[in-house]
Each structure stands twice: as C-alpha cells, then as structure tokens.
Length: 440
Image (cartoon, rainbow, N blue to C red; front, side):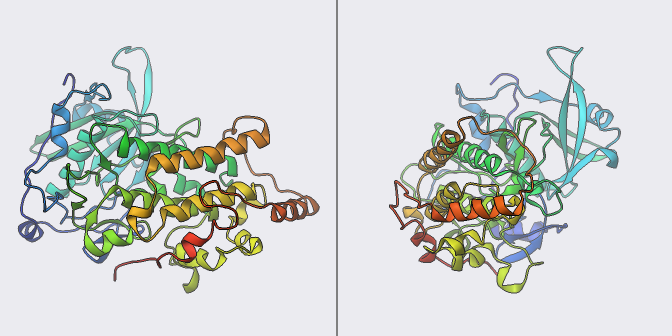
C-alpha cells in the first residue's frame, strides 16, 4: 500500500505477559482492567490486553494485516514525521500548547506546512506516547493500523506518525487533524458555561452512530471500538462529531465465531455487563456503550460520578426510577442546564433508542445501522418541526418563567409513538433491563 508502512507486533501468551509488564495509573475516571479499578484518562489502557484473539480461533489476526489488503476505503496517504519536526512544531512539547492528557500520553496543538503546498499551514494535534514501554507501543501500533486504513467523515483523521528509536529512547507519536471544539464530555461538564443545545446533541448522536455503523458493518472486516465514550468523541469547527482514540479497538470475530475473547478493558460505566463478566467481546458491546452515551446526552451526567450522592452516582441506576409512563418523572432526568430548551418528544424517542441498546441480552440489541436509522428519524422529525436544518452550536438562552412553564406544560401533553416499540411501551426496555454491572 503506497505511502503507508505496516507495523506489527507478536502475540504473546497472556499469562507470561502479565509478569513482564505493569499497569500505570494517571488521573481521571476509573477504568476496568481484569476486575480492578485503575485511575486513567483519555484512552483506558491495560498491560494485560495483549493477544486479544478468540480462543476458538486457530488463526490469529492482527490489525497489521489490514494494511496488506487493498481496499477502496483505505487511507493510504499517511505522512511520516521525524521527531525533530514534531519537536519544533510543538515548541519542544511546551505545556502552553498541551490540550489534553490521557493514558497514552500528552496531546499538543501544533501547526505544520501542508505536504502538497508548503506555502499553506494546517493545525494538527500531536499525541506523544508516554515512555511506558511495550504496552503503550501496542496501542500506538493499533491506532496507526486502524486509522491508517479506515476513512470516514465521522472518524478523526490520522495525518501521520513518528517512530524513532535512538539514545533518547523510544519516540512514538501520532499526528491527527485538529479538532477545535474538543470532546463531547468537555461540553457536558458543569464547568462549561454554555451547555450543548439540544439540536446539537441530536446531531452528535447521529454522527456517533454513523461512525460506529461504519466500523461494524461497512467494511470487508469488522472493527469493535471497545472504548466508546463521550471523551473519545471529538467535535470539529462545524460541530461535526468524530470518533477518536482507537488504541483499544479490536477486529471482530472470524467467520463462524461468535465473539473475540479478550482481557476486560474499557471505562467503568460504559462497558457492557456480559463483556465484564465473561471477557467475550462482540460489536453489541459497542451498542451498549452507545446506549449509555445517549443517556449522557439526555441528562448531562457522567455514567459514573463519585461526586454525586450515593444513590445518584451510577447514571443507569439513577435514571431507572424515572423511566416509566409518567412523563413528569421522565422530565426530571433531562439536563437542567438546557433550561427547558428542548423537544420533549425527541428526548423521549432518544431514550427509547437508548433502552433498545441497553437490553440485557446482547442478541436482542439492534445493530448500529438500525440504531442510526432510528436516530436519523428523530433528527429528521426535529428538522421538520423547525422547518430548517439543525443549526450549529448556539448558546442556550434563559427563557422567562411563563415561557418555560408553558413549554413544559405543552411538552407533557405530547404522546410518544415509537414506530419500533409502539405507543406508551417505549420505557419498558430499561425498567426490565439489568442493573449497572461494575467490577469491584
């Protein structure tokens, strides 16, 4: 494949690798790793996740093999940077240019000259691998081989990479397109003055579903994201949502196999219960995570927030008592920062989609293409009701008291008719579904 180098690494025995590597903890939300909580941010890495192939498969497949397969979908124009180039672009990795810090390492904003026109410059984001040895290198390899192959408007574009080994040690960096509006999680945070408008949240839900549907169903092979969460959904200058951080991604099961057996990794609050309990990974695990994400958009809350009162710390446990046919109860879970500026009908329908994604039995959950179709119907209905396309980010204006109360009263009069679930039955899924499963 032109302009792209294939990276690979050997698959070792899991039992041996755990002796030779150590997990590293950094600040942020807890992650799942073989039943233990770890403090990590950005991508949630574990050192025990090495082979990650089906125990039923006699053939071990790595992402490196993807780059050997020609495809019209491949992004085969990756740029190879020198460490000196990126060091200069980031002003020697100045903390003033640092825009993020995760399990992989630090992310810096930089400017480079375009390869096809050196007179023009472009903004980039440079992610530098923390010097943690082999495990971080494997996540780096996965990202190069996944994003170097796929190409979709709802996946963050990988511009290039740097791989140098010298007396200074291992230098592994990734260069992405710059996403100026940061992550969805950033905008759902209570620290942000202006919350995401409801129309923007609907568009984000649609974009994220489109990205997952592409990974699951629109290529010759299947990719399971495995770390789908709001902090891994970035927003470009036009508020289009793009999936990012593919270090934990895995190829789907081979023909004839039902799952991929892996070490349990991910972020607490997003991981599907059957994956936590068994380590058996399928694309339906991503579908579960997407359902959790929809409730994030609806409520403005994190899946796990230890700063909340004990009975409100787990998002799914907290929303469950409100998921009933009493619309007054349902409205209590809607993000109060929206100040009533939302469509109750579309919020109900979006919760209905979330409930389908959160069904206890994985086989009962829809495919992401079906989820995308349902979310697109909600978006189209919202467009029709407003008579125009969903607008980009606009600040949420504070309504006067009478207007807000009138909006609430009118919203409570609406009845939801879900074409899939049926009238007044949209809430049954989650009320009969599983409790949030976590490890201890």
